[in-house]
Image (cartoon, rainbow, N blue to C red):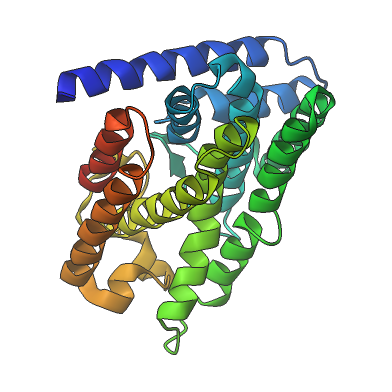
Length: 294
Protein backbone atom coordinates (compact mmCIF):
# COMPACT_ATOMS: atom_id res chain seq x y z
CA UNK A 1 0.00 0.00 0.00
CA UNK A 2 1.45 3.36 -1.01
CA UNK A 3 1.48 6.36 1.29
CA UNK A 4 -1.13 8.01 -0.93
CA UNK A 5 -3.41 4.96 -0.79
CA UNK A 6 -3.01 4.77 2.97
CA UNK A 7 -3.90 8.44 3.40
CA UNK A 8 -6.90 8.09 1.10
CA UNK A 9 -8.22 5.10 3.05
CA UNK A 10 -7.57 6.80 6.40
CA UNK A 11 -9.39 9.92 5.23
CA UNK A 12 -12.29 7.75 4.08
CA UNK A 13 -12.63 6.12 7.50
CA UNK A 14 -12.21 9.52 9.14
CA UNK A 15 -14.94 11.14 7.05
CA UNK A 16 -17.34 8.28 7.68
CA UNK A 17 -16.84 8.58 11.42
CA UNK A 18 -16.90 12.39 11.50
CA UNK A 19 -20.20 12.42 9.58
CA UNK A 20 -21.61 10.02 12.18
CA UNK A 21 -20.21 12.12 15.03
CA UNK A 22 -21.59 15.40 13.66
CA UNK A 23 -25.03 13.83 13.29
CA UNK A 24 -24.79 12.80 16.94
CA UNK A 25 -23.72 16.32 17.99
CA UNK A 26 -26.51 17.94 16.00
CA UNK A 27 -29.04 15.71 17.71
CA UNK A 28 -27.69 16.29 21.20
CA UNK A 29 -30.47 18.16 22.97
CA UNK A 30 -29.66 19.01 26.57
CA UNK A 31 -30.04 22.03 28.81
CA UNK A 32 -28.64 24.43 29.82
CA UNK A 33 -27.05 25.52 26.57
CA UNK A 34 -23.59 25.78 28.14
CA UNK A 35 -23.67 22.05 28.84
CA UNK A 36 -24.43 21.17 25.23
CA UNK A 37 -21.88 23.71 23.99
CA UNK A 38 -19.11 22.41 26.24
CA UNK A 39 -19.87 18.80 25.30
CA UNK A 40 -19.79 19.43 21.57
CA UNK A 41 -16.88 21.91 21.68
CA UNK A 42 -14.34 19.25 22.55
CA UNK A 43 -15.89 16.69 20.23
CA UNK A 44 -15.80 19.01 17.24
CA UNK A 45 -12.27 20.41 17.50
CA UNK A 46 -11.00 17.50 15.46
CA UNK A 47 -8.14 15.12 15.97
CA UNK A 48 -6.83 11.99 14.28
CA UNK A 49 -9.74 9.85 15.59
CA UNK A 50 -7.32 6.94 15.64
CA UNK A 51 -9.60 4.82 17.82
CA UNK A 52 -12.65 4.92 15.51
CA UNK A 53 -10.39 4.51 12.47
CA UNK A 54 -8.79 1.46 14.08
CA UNK A 55 -12.20 -0.01 14.83
CA UNK A 56 -13.41 0.51 11.27
CA UNK A 57 -10.21 -0.96 9.79
CA UNK A 58 -10.30 -4.06 12.00
CA UNK A 59 -13.99 -4.51 11.24
CA UNK A 60 -13.20 -4.58 7.52
CA UNK A 61 -10.28 -6.94 8.12
CA UNK A 62 -12.63 -9.36 9.91
CA UNK A 63 -15.47 -8.83 7.44
CA UNK A 64 -17.72 -7.16 10.03
CA UNK A 65 -20.04 -4.46 8.68
CA UNK A 66 -18.82 -1.03 9.76
CA UNK A 67 -22.41 -0.04 10.56
CA UNK A 68 -22.38 -2.64 13.34
CA UNK A 69 -19.44 -1.03 15.12
CA UNK A 70 -20.26 2.66 14.59
CA UNK A 71 -22.09 3.07 17.94
CA UNK A 72 -19.13 1.45 19.71
CA UNK A 73 -16.67 3.69 17.87
CA UNK A 74 -18.70 6.71 18.95
CA UNK A 75 -18.79 5.50 22.55
CA UNK A 76 -15.01 5.02 22.58
CA UNK A 77 -14.46 8.51 21.14
CA UNK A 78 -16.77 10.01 23.78
CA UNK A 79 -14.78 8.26 26.51
CA UNK A 80 -11.51 9.40 24.97
CA UNK A 81 -12.70 13.01 24.68
CA UNK A 82 -13.91 13.06 28.27
CA UNK A 83 -10.48 11.83 29.36
CA UNK A 84 -8.78 14.64 27.42
CA UNK A 85 -11.03 17.29 28.98
CA UNK A 86 -10.22 16.03 32.46
CA UNK A 87 -6.55 15.47 31.62
CA UNK A 88 -6.15 19.15 30.68
CA UNK A 89 -7.51 20.38 34.03
CA UNK A 90 -5.13 22.26 36.33
CA UNK A 91 -5.38 19.45 38.89
CA UNK A 92 -4.30 16.87 36.30
CA UNK A 93 -1.85 17.66 33.46
CA UNK A 94 -2.66 21.39 33.48
CA UNK A 95 -2.68 22.22 29.77
CA UNK A 96 -4.29 25.32 28.29
CA UNK A 97 -4.45 23.93 24.75
CA UNK A 98 -5.82 20.87 23.02
CA UNK A 99 -5.58 20.27 19.28
CA UNK A 100 -4.40 23.83 18.77
CA UNK A 101 -7.39 25.42 20.52
CA UNK A 102 -8.05 26.49 24.11
CA UNK A 103 -8.78 23.56 26.40
CA UNK A 104 -12.37 23.06 27.51
CA UNK A 105 -11.78 24.54 30.96
CA UNK A 106 -10.20 27.67 29.46
CA UNK A 107 -13.37 28.30 27.44
CA UNK A 108 -16.11 27.18 29.84
CA UNK A 109 -14.41 27.15 33.26
CA UNK A 110 -13.21 24.24 35.37
CA UNK A 111 -16.61 23.34 36.78
CA UNK A 112 -18.29 23.16 33.39
CA UNK A 113 -15.32 21.21 31.96
CA UNK A 114 -15.70 18.60 34.69
CA UNK A 115 -19.40 18.33 33.91
CA UNK A 116 -18.71 18.10 30.16
CA UNK A 117 -16.40 15.17 30.78
CA UNK A 118 -18.94 13.55 33.09
CA UNK A 119 -21.64 14.07 30.47
CA UNK A 120 -19.60 12.47 27.70
CA UNK A 121 -18.78 9.44 29.85
CA UNK A 122 -22.39 8.88 30.88
CA UNK A 123 -23.60 9.33 27.31
CA UNK A 124 -21.05 6.76 26.14
CA UNK A 125 -22.50 4.20 28.54
CA UNK A 126 -26.01 5.06 27.41
CA UNK A 127 -24.94 4.28 23.84
CA UNK A 128 -23.41 0.98 24.92
CA UNK A 129 -26.53 -0.04 26.84
CA UNK A 130 -28.61 0.66 23.76
CA UNK A 131 -26.54 -1.91 21.84
CA UNK A 132 -26.90 -4.67 24.41
CA UNK A 133 -30.32 -5.77 23.15
CA UNK A 134 -28.78 -6.94 19.86
CA UNK A 135 -27.17 -10.08 21.24
CA UNK A 136 -24.64 -11.60 23.60
CA UNK A 137 -21.66 -10.44 21.54
CA UNK A 138 -22.87 -6.83 21.79
CA UNK A 139 -23.14 -7.19 25.56
CA UNK A 140 -19.60 -8.58 25.66
CA UNK A 141 -18.27 -5.75 23.49
CA UNK A 142 -19.95 -3.15 25.70
CA UNK A 143 -18.57 -4.78 28.83
CA UNK A 144 -15.08 -4.84 27.35
CA UNK A 145 -15.16 -1.10 26.64
CA UNK A 146 -16.45 -0.41 30.16
CA UNK A 147 -13.65 -2.44 31.72
CA UNK A 148 -11.00 -0.75 29.58
CA UNK A 149 -12.31 2.70 30.52
CA UNK A 150 -12.71 2.02 34.23
CA UNK A 151 -10.78 1.42 37.42
CA UNK A 152 -9.03 -1.61 35.93
CA UNK A 153 -8.09 0.33 32.80
CA UNK A 154 -7.68 3.95 31.78
CA UNK A 155 -8.60 5.45 35.15
CA UNK A 156 -6.07 3.20 36.90
CA UNK A 157 -3.41 4.38 34.47
CA UNK A 158 -4.29 8.03 35.02
CA UNK A 159 -4.17 7.53 38.78
CA UNK A 160 -0.76 5.87 38.62
CA UNK A 161 0.47 8.65 36.33
CA UNK A 162 -0.40 11.22 39.00
CA UNK A 163 0.89 9.07 41.84
CA UNK A 164 4.35 8.71 40.37
CA UNK A 165 5.00 12.34 39.48
CA UNK A 166 8.44 13.34 40.80
CA UNK A 167 8.95 9.75 42.02
CA UNK A 168 12.65 9.00 41.63
CA UNK A 169 12.15 5.33 42.59
CA UNK A 170 9.73 4.48 39.77
CA UNK A 171 10.84 1.60 37.56
CA UNK A 172 9.98 -0.16 34.31
CA UNK A 173 7.15 -2.12 35.92
CA UNK A 174 5.46 1.11 36.96
CA UNK A 175 5.88 2.60 33.49
CA UNK A 176 4.43 -0.52 31.86
CA UNK A 177 1.39 -0.32 34.15
CA UNK A 178 0.79 3.36 33.35
CA UNK A 179 1.13 2.94 29.60
CA UNK A 180 -0.84 -0.29 29.32
CA UNK A 181 -3.74 1.26 31.18
CA UNK A 182 -3.65 5.01 30.51
CA UNK A 183 -3.24 4.72 26.74
CA UNK A 184 -3.25 1.06 25.80
CA UNK A 185 -6.59 -0.05 27.16
CA UNK A 186 -8.80 2.17 24.97
CA UNK A 187 -6.79 1.23 21.88
CA UNK A 188 -7.21 -2.40 22.91
CA UNK A 189 -10.95 -1.79 23.13
CA UNK A 190 -10.97 -0.28 19.65
CA UNK A 191 -9.53 -3.41 18.04
CA UNK A 192 -11.25 -5.89 20.37
CA UNK A 193 -14.83 -4.80 19.62
CA UNK A 194 -14.89 -6.00 15.98
CA UNK A 195 -13.21 -9.23 17.07
CA UNK A 196 -15.86 -9.84 19.72
CA UNK A 197 -18.71 -9.09 17.34
CA UNK A 198 -17.17 -11.43 14.75
CA UNK A 199 -17.27 -14.32 17.23
CA UNK A 200 -13.84 -13.69 18.77
CA UNK A 201 -11.86 -14.03 15.53
CA UNK A 202 -8.19 -13.38 16.31
CA UNK A 203 -9.19 -11.88 19.64
CA UNK A 204 -5.89 -12.63 21.51
CA UNK A 205 -3.74 -11.42 18.62
CA UNK A 206 -5.68 -8.20 18.14
CA UNK A 207 -5.77 -7.38 21.85
CA UNK A 208 -1.99 -7.82 22.02
CA UNK A 209 -1.69 -5.64 18.92
CA UNK A 210 -3.79 -2.94 20.59
CA UNK A 211 -1.71 -3.12 23.77
CA UNK A 212 1.59 -2.72 21.95
CA UNK A 213 0.19 -0.01 19.69
CA UNK A 214 -0.96 1.87 22.79
CA UNK A 215 2.53 1.67 24.28
CA UNK A 216 3.99 2.83 20.94
CA UNK A 217 1.56 5.75 20.80
CA UNK A 218 2.44 6.87 24.33
CA UNK A 219 6.19 6.51 23.91
CA UNK A 220 6.04 8.61 20.73
CA UNK A 221 4.08 11.16 22.77
CA UNK A 222 6.98 11.27 25.22
CA UNK A 223 9.46 11.76 22.39
CA UNK A 224 7.34 14.52 20.83
CA UNK A 225 7.15 16.31 24.18
CA UNK A 226 10.90 16.79 23.77
CA UNK A 227 11.25 17.19 20.01
CA UNK A 228 7.79 18.27 18.87
CA UNK A 229 6.46 21.68 17.89
CA UNK A 230 3.30 23.34 19.22
CA UNK A 231 2.29 24.24 15.67
CA UNK A 232 2.07 20.55 14.82
CA UNK A 233 1.07 19.02 18.15
CA UNK A 234 -1.57 21.58 19.04
CA UNK A 235 -0.65 21.33 22.72
CA UNK A 236 2.13 22.52 24.98
CA UNK A 237 5.55 20.88 24.68
CA UNK A 238 8.19 20.32 27.35
CA UNK A 239 5.50 19.79 29.99
CA UNK A 240 6.49 16.29 31.08
CA UNK A 241 9.79 17.38 32.59
CA UNK A 242 8.27 20.55 34.02
CA UNK A 243 5.47 18.59 35.72
CA UNK A 244 7.81 15.84 36.91
CA UNK A 245 6.06 13.18 34.83
CA UNK A 246 7.44 9.66 34.85
CA UNK A 247 7.89 8.85 31.17
CA UNK A 248 9.84 6.58 28.87
CA UNK A 249 12.26 9.44 28.21
CA UNK A 250 12.90 9.96 31.92
CA UNK A 251 13.53 6.22 32.35
CA UNK A 252 15.35 5.24 29.15
CA UNK A 253 16.52 8.57 27.78
CA UNK A 254 15.56 10.00 24.39
CA UNK A 255 17.65 7.61 22.28
CA UNK A 256 16.62 4.62 24.34
CA UNK A 257 12.96 5.57 23.92
CA UNK A 258 13.38 5.77 20.14
CA UNK A 259 14.91 2.28 20.08
CA UNK A 260 12.01 0.90 22.10
CA UNK A 261 9.54 2.64 19.81
CA UNK A 262 11.16 0.95 16.81
CA UNK A 263 10.93 -2.45 18.50
CA UNK A 264 7.27 -1.90 19.39
CA UNK A 265 6.44 -0.92 15.81
CA UNK A 266 8.11 -4.11 14.56
CA UNK A 267 6.19 -6.17 17.12
CA UNK A 268 2.88 -4.67 15.97
CA UNK A 269 3.58 -5.51 12.34
CA UNK A 270 4.61 -9.08 13.21
CA UNK A 271 1.38 -9.64 15.15
CA UNK A 272 -0.67 -8.50 12.15
CA UNK A 273 1.12 -11.03 9.94
CA UNK A 274 -0.55 -13.78 11.99
CA UNK A 275 -4.02 -12.47 11.09
CA UNK A 276 -5.49 -13.71 7.82
CA UNK A 277 -6.71 -10.94 5.53
CA UNK A 278 -5.47 -7.68 4.10
CA UNK A 279 -3.78 -5.94 7.03
CA UNK A 280 -1.65 -3.55 4.96
CA UNK A 281 -3.61 -0.51 6.09
CA UNK A 282 -3.07 -1.40 9.75
CA UNK A 283 0.63 -1.97 9.14
CA UNK A 284 0.88 1.46 7.55
CA UNK A 285 -1.00 2.92 10.50
CA UNK A 286 1.61 1.47 12.84
CA UNK A 287 4.40 3.10 10.82
CA UNK A 288 2.54 6.41 10.80
CA UNK A 289 2.20 6.32 14.59
CA UNK A 290 5.95 5.68 14.90
CA UNK A 291 6.84 8.57 12.57
CA UNK A 292 4.10 10.99 13.61
CA UNK A 293 4.78 14.66 14.30
CA UNK A 294 1.40 15.47 15.88
